Image (cartoon, rainbow, N blue to C red; front, side, top):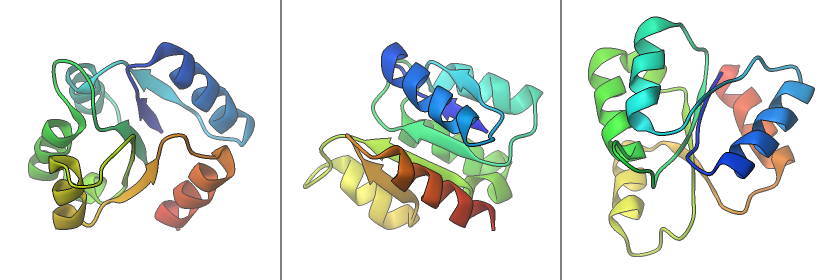
Length: 117
């Protein structure tokens, strides 16, 4: 799994929780780094923040959808406030799964397992 999150403390906490649940987790600090990792390795699932520096989650998703459509169907977004924003429109248009921050690790684990089934 690739965890794309620019908040280091959150990335560490979520990554540790996912690892404790049995996932092998790589981390990228933004969408640009995530694109490089996806180009160099194979992932079964991506958990991605929407708001990040350099390449945000929406740009990252569009690049993945164009290059690896099957992987794009296995992306879960995590984000803060989305109501009435471009992010809300993006999530509705793409039909991507997403969780609002702050989220419970149990909810992320459930979503991850559902995507992988």
